[in-house]
Structures are given as C-alpha cells and as structure tokens.
Length: 534
Ligand SMILES: *Cc1c(COP(=O)(O)O)cnc(C)c1O
Ligand SMILES: *[C@@H]1O[C@H](CO)[C@@H](O)[C@H](O)[C@H]1NC(C)=O
Image (cartoon, rainbow, N blue to C red; front, side, top):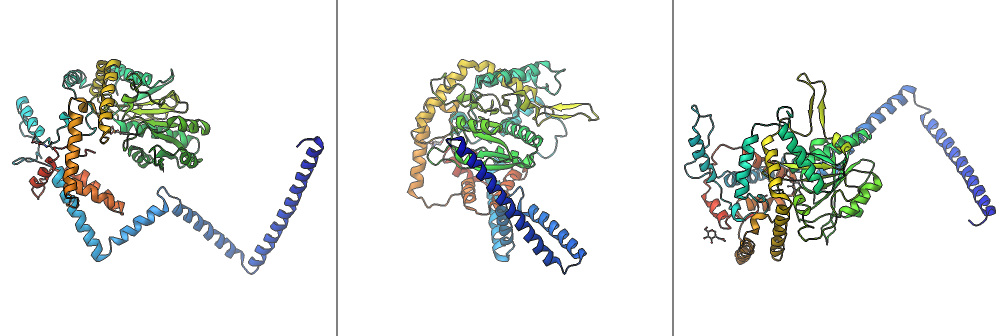
C-alpha cells in the first residue's frame, strides 16, 4: 500500500465485502428458519420439547463417553482384551500362563535359605539386643547381589564405609526428631532449610528460589506436579495436562494417576534420543499445566534440550519442571570437574522447578531428595493446610505428615562432609569411569564402579556373558529374565499390570513358595548378580 488513495480504495472494498457477507448470512438464516419450521409443521409442541430434551441428554452422554481421562482407543483395546479372556478355551489358557508366571516370580523374588522361615507373630518375650543383632545377620545372608563390589548398575550410589559410620552416628542423634514439630526439634528445621538452600545455590537459583526436602525423587516429582495442577485449576483449566518426553521417569505417570492429570508423551528425536521440541510445541494447548524435561533421563542417560524448551515455557507462560533426580548432584559439579555441559538449571529462563535426589549422586542415605522452585509463589501451591482440623491448624509442606528428622540430619551431614571438593572429585571419577565403560556398553555408573578394576571386570563379564548367549542363542530364558522378556511382547498391557501387581503382592509374602528355588538361584549366580536391578 503506497498511497493514501489506494488505502482508501482498500478500506472501501473491505467494507463493501463485509456488507455482502452480512446479506448472505441473513439469507441463509432465513432459509434455515423456513426449512426447520416446515419440517416441524406437523409436530405437536410436546414432541419438539421431548426431542430436544432427548437430544441434549444424548449429546451430553456422548461427550462424556468420548472424552475421558483415558483415550477411546485405549478403552476399546482394554475391552477387547477383556472379551478375549472370557472366550472359554483361550481365556483359561491365558490364565494358566499367568498363574505360571506369578508362581515363577514368587520363586525367584522371595528367596529364603534352607531351613529359614517367616516370623508371623510378635515374639512373646522380647529379644535381647544381642539376639536382635544375631538375627539381622541372618537376614543379611540373603543378599546374593554383590553391590559392594560394583556389580550393579545404579541402585547404591556410594555406600562408603567411613561415610556410613558417620551417618549412623548422626542418625542416632536425631532418630526421634520430626520436622513436623519445629518448636521441639529446631535443629532439624535448620538442617532442612540449609539442605534446600545449598541445593538452590548449586542449581543457580536466585534470592527467591526455594524448595523442600522430600522422601525421594518420586515425591519431589509428585509435589511439583501437584503444585502445577493446583495452579492450572486456579487458571480455570478443568483437565490439566503434563507435557513430557516419552523417556521421562514413570513417577510422572504416577503423578498424573494420583492427581487426575493427563500425561501427554512426546516422542524423541531418533538420532539424539532428546525430546522432539517441535512436537512438544504442537502438543501445547489451553489445558497445558506444565512442561517437563529430564537432565538426564533414566532410560538412556540423555539430557533433553532444556534451553529450547525453556523458550517455549517462557513464550506460552507455562511452568517448566526439570527432572534432575538421577544426575542432579553430578551435573552441577561437572563444569568444576572439567566437563562442559549446556545450562540445565535456573540459569535457563523458563525453568520454574527442579527435582534432584540427594539419595542418588548426593550420596546421602535412601529417603531424601529435594524439589526446588525458582520462586516462592510456586511452592505455595505445593503446601497443604487444613485450617479447621479439630486437632489444630494443620500445615504440612509435602505428602507425609510426620517425617524422619534422622534422615534429614544424615542428608545434611553427607553434604557437609562431602563438601564441594568431595563432590567434584567424585564427579570426576564417575564421569571418567563412565567414559571407560561407554566404550563397551553404558550403564548407570556410581562411585562403586570407580574402584580399581571394576570397569574392566564388568566389560569382560559382559563379553563372557554375550559369548555364552551367542553359543546357543535359542536357549530358553528362565526366572525373572523370562518374565521380563515375555512381558515386552504381550499386547494386552492389562496382563502386564496384573503380573506386576502379583510381583508387589509377592514382596509382602510371608509364605514359602511351594516350588523349591535352588534351580533358579544357581542360574542367577552364573552372572554373579551383575544383572539388571530395576
Ligand atoms: C530415580 C529417578 C526418579 C525417582 O526417584 P526415586 O527416588 O526412585 O523415587 C525420577 N527421575 C529420574 C530420572 C530418576 O532416575
Ligand atoms: C562368579 O563368582 C564365582 C565365585 O565367587 C567365581 O568363581 C566366578 O569366576 C565368578 N564368575 C564371573 C562370571 O565373574
């Protein structure tokens, strides 16, 4: 548009077109009116009212049926498999296989030694201290997996003996403390506040950054999702959605399940195994409550493109959680240990929260983690307050009510004892060992693997194991390995859920399985327990 003359022409044309559209619309409305009236001419008023009522109810029902938490296709699939299991012959054969799998599992999970039995009643006369200590030795003999020798991936991140001694002392000092009562246990309150502050500083949080200590990574993730769900509710979102990479930890599935949210899984880029940021952008809708990335994720150990997703989070004003549960206390020290990384923490604009497990590479004992927020306004949505409880005003920061002060004290003691130099040193060792092992295969490397010879020994074991398999690749797998393999091929995922629930039941079993287990345990010993632990 170059001259005011043409401008005038254009606006004149536009208003003319608008007029034409208006006329046309009116004409169609009139036609529709005449058509509907002619169709209803023979109907009595009650018929029209009844039809309208039925249609409305039908439409509401149809909407409720079509749009549920679980997608239509997933529900149809489930129903189909449910029907298949009702078919006489096929159904019973599936049930037989299922029972066999459950039996196999209870045999390989609930291992007892010859002559051992379960305690099912309180001892009538309490045991003496010596008797108790003797008795736990018996329980220790059940261990077959040699984690102290560095024969498992992940699971125990250090467990150094000297550190254990210190932690036992510290736990003893605080065994009876409970941060639910800060007036009675002010020391634990101070320790928790300090653990959170030290973690905030490590992740480059600003002066408004904050957080809480939780019982583990899962609780940290649950709390962030809960906070963002409540924020979404406040913004009028009825069905809040979590947008996360498909590689994200299952704790997000758990959070979605517990808190009535929908988890939308975003595929990965094939080459890098990082989340596809474009697909993530496309998934954003008016229902989006939060975006998630991992640093790194559990399945492949890859760090997602946090800077790019941070830009999305800023642009659409959506909270953004970085799950650094696994490697948080490793990656914050990598730069000082001499390994360069892209920014992944509160330095990235858009990142509003981070979860990091002190009980993984923080080397603290199990039962501690932190969830951190860039600003106090997010943490408020995590808190729970029952102002009218008959027992008093009840305010608690996370899932639990009473919490183990001893664990918080032990976590604090670990961080203080490690210090920056300790962590940087540990990080250097772990990353170096990882590079050694990565030349052969990639596992979750911990301080246990940095002992001399462990990495080389592991690579040799893998080579030997593969050689054994390759000699007779068609040989039938047994025990948990067989169940795991079979589970991957079952199209009916509800069967997998059923078997897994059986597994959890098994963990609480105090019955000795009917079949004897020697056969299976000897198979497992073959690899000296260096098999999968998760
Ligand atoms: C371990 C882990 C979690 C969950 O932590 P828990 O302490 O097992 O509850 C979450 N995310 C990642 C990436 C993890 O590795
Ligand atoms: C497993 O342990 C046994 C006894 O400790 C040992 O003789 C054997 O060589 C080990 N096997 C492997 C594969 O490490």
